[in-house]
Image 1 (cartoon, one colour):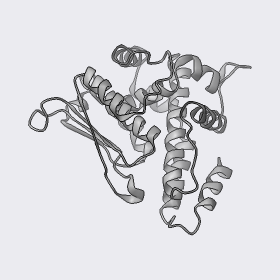
Image 2 (cartoon, rainbow, N blue to C red):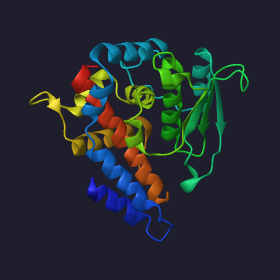
Image 3 (cartoon, rainbow, N blue to C red):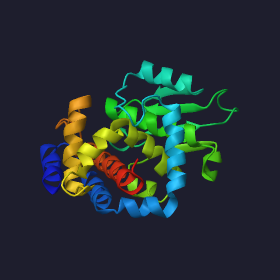
Image 4 (cartoon, rainbow, N blue to C red):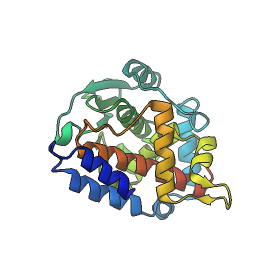
Length: 250
């Protein structure tokens, strides 16, 4: 993974990559984190299967096939079927993408629960932010902190997500849309010993998978920090999916 980080930073050299070192540090922390330990700390087998059951009941095809929807109008239709509204806005911040999205369940703000997503993102990142907020919407009754009226996703620190059970659950929705069970086993489980692959292998497999299903790549025209944030997200969701498969067989 170090070679890929150096390639991303090198490609953007001279184009304002002052934030890249912070992004790289966050990525390294994500890559070295023990995801299975974090999941087991917060969720028993029964609890995790109940949460994933709620997500799969609400999202047709989840964990059985890749959910490829990226078009805003189709995402809006998904939100509407779930009793929510989708709003796309441009939230400019550090690298133009600090605020990824938020979820509001407050009738003083909106007659229906509101999913708001930053449109200044790559389409696959926009879709990921959408499914994350859908995860909050679907599972808001399972965990006490989901009673908060506004749940925001302001930054790219995935390590903080792993200390916050509602954020873990919302991230599960994202991981399951991209890596349904049959594909997750093929990508993230070593067929020789039925153990999870190394983090480096997971990331390599995830990059190839997202290139096939969503034509995603680390564009040299993007700021280095933004590409590193995308790589951190890709690493986070791949490791989360691998831990879900390895620890809970989901």
